[in-house]
Image (cartoon, rainbow, N blue to C red; front, side, top):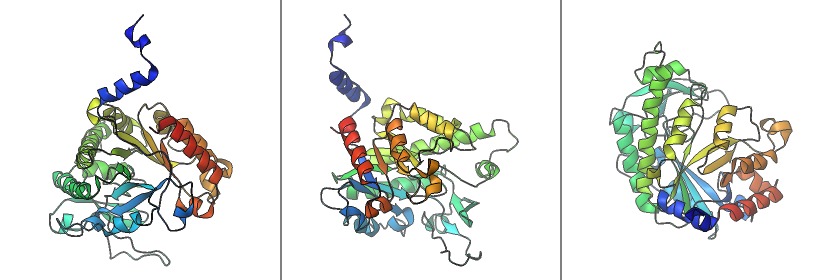
Length: 350
């Protein structure tokens, strides 16, 4: 009989964890995607996502302001946990452009001093109809300043036992999700100095993008050495080639079994980014999700059935999901929240 046959499944699991590196406590259940006073009254809310922008955290180079984080954490009950998303992204909008009536002009996600003082190069693109300037994720100055900002936030919060997960900031359309929705592929290739006529152009962009993604992820890991980390994925160039490379990267042992994948668009549908859904279904690592919209936005869900969100999350093996605060405030699906909390606790909690 083989030695492995003499060992219990639990012991084998522990051995595997130690082989991969130290195990950290990871979030389970349902967290509100925005923390509000009404949402925290729902007993099914296990915690909440704290969202801030890099421009809020570091309004001036080297000067850090944690007010936006503290304001949200204070709303939580003592027994509730939290996760953290610091949005990177564009530094400025074209203020010469008119704003449609009823819409608010967007503010910057990353601090504008990256450009005005450090002279980081940007490329022009559009975000939800706003012309913006995007610093390049792969720029060494961007990566260095991201790391310094993350170190400062980690010094402040890495020891907080209620902080369970930190998302990797990205220089993308919304600064957390890994997409450039609506941005022509040629714009990205030209920003990276790649000839759009090169038949390997997208692969070359992937080389640059994966390297930048890895560097930013390692910066998060170093700043929060005892926390779980998540990197949000979307298709790029309407392809899963680059996401697949990132998935494979994070399964290497040097990531200590700490880096999971975020999917901020769970809806119950499989026709949107269907190939990426299939990849994630076969992924052996940790998965974290955010629901694509509110339950009253029927068009977002198959046949308007919001409950299919929970079914999809279970099929994908997600440890934790973030429904919108609307669900917690209005108690639209308490039974589904309760069942999901119980199932993930039974499956994943220590």
